[in-house]
Image (cartoon, rainbow, N blue to C red; front, side, top):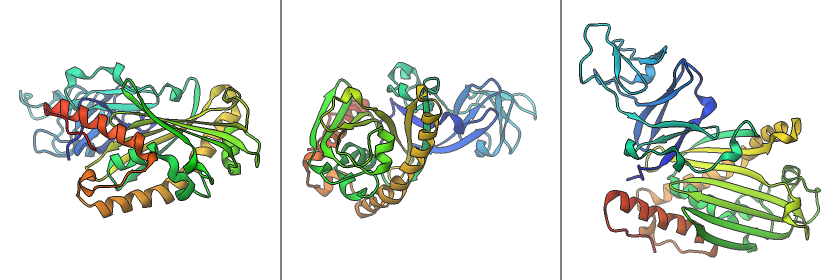
Length: 348
């Protein structure tokens, strides 16, 4: 399976990478080692020593270099061999590197043409900046393709059925809905009126338990699979400006064509003090339950049924709520075609 390369993908939460430590991941089918040097700088190297192809993540961080455990060669953050304990450094002793940027509590990797890696192109997840927000963070490894994950978040009508006792309620599938493109973003917006939410959702959104509310869920997609969800609720009939909007992130990075890394968060303002910190941890724990026990089995079941077949070749029927996901798939298809220098063949 091909992937869009000239773009930013999430590689890790910032806190996953402690100073002097390494983290091994497969991203876009490539074996990658992430590491943080003694100055706190982050780097991403191909996880393969050029000498005898040993995995570098089995070695150690020595100051500002990674040391291969097999024969002791050391490589800096630019992939250059800076130490050979056996003699002169061979001219070809280099490791492939990828640009890695720390921003919005995440590590972002660019696995295409490094000359095009402009950090300005990282999507805006500023609501996760730790200086202004309490951020609850989660991660799941999913045995399904990343575009099925995109479809899942872009069409939240499924929450009425798949998450009936956790995130959903009756009437969500019949909500007012619009999908639209704004610049390089695709938005999927859903609004319900007079909804009765469960107590956990009421507490998270700061509305009275058991009372009818108007709830909005607006999802922003940026290629290839970085999504921000802005949800809030107010007592029915009140202006939205009176509500507490709670942002969450849903960022998907392909591990392979049929497996995906899933980073998700929920955010509360630091201005809320201790309450915000407590809610961030309580709510991220609450979200893990439906994500892990409801979404994952469904997505992995979809992938198992699809096998290696291309999505559109199976001729899926489309419902109204699929509009956002289809717009995202079309835009991604155009970007991938342009990167490959081919004529675009967007889905129907």
